[in-house]
Length: 403
Image (cartoon, rainbow, N blue to C red; front, side, top):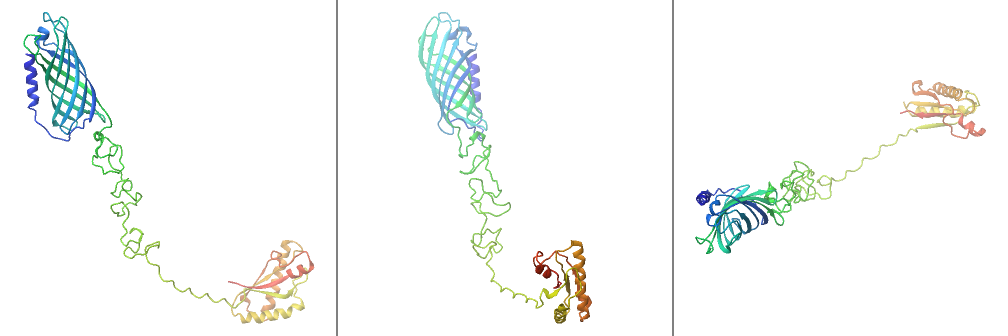
């Protein structure tokens, strides 16, 4: 009955339709551990043929192409038996063969396995033998992490030439679970450093920089991936060529987005436009003929006095004649003192001196609205106040053209 169930199970899965999808990516080479349960027929274990016995094994796999794998495995199991003259048995199978991936899904693959090998049986009471065998199985392999796999398989092993037991041959059924570790680096088809299983952008161009999901980066958003972009800092919205560099229609080295004359080559300029012909500089404005300041040489005052000295009259007459020639220019009459006495006193004294000169000039016909008297005290000396000669020079009046 047990063999009938197993045969039906295998037949059902063999009839399973092949649904082609993005195939799960299994390791190119793998080493794994196997655990499960095994059943032997009554010729070995008597009426315990429906009882499961623990199995332990190791497996090696090597991918041969897109739809087939080479495998080899070694499985051991202690079988409880009650057949007279046999007792318990240790069964070890060693096999090798091919797996055909008949249905590839996104995360797992269906496979059928077929192989040849040896079956070794060691019983408590004899017989002990090693015979050739054939194997047929079906199962699934599931992706785990970047390069590992989980698998399950049910299979039937049939030995041949077993003369030590009645009915030449021994059938052994196994249901196995396994975990395999990929040997070497996980597959990375586009070479971006992200394994195929984890790569959400599996066709990234070579040389492009990617994020942790394997998708290309484009820091400046110009459509050319980082790592391939020769101008990675292009401003947003600027049109670029295949290298990611801003377009330069006139080839003058100034990109179009900065070139104010994009169809006119002007290398070396800041704005991409040919330099304009230099215009002649305008002639400098003629300096006014009127002096800015007229110092009344010889118009000095006695110490602590605002009275004009007789020897100043000739100078003031000449100044009045000059001011008449200046037209309507407004004039500041600036009075000054030496440093004798206090600042406050000297400021008032200089104002009285300026007023005296202004009054004289008005008497000589200069319009009063053109003349503005202002005293500066001792603040603007023109000579050394420590000598009599210097102090004499500092007691003066100046005529200054007003703006």
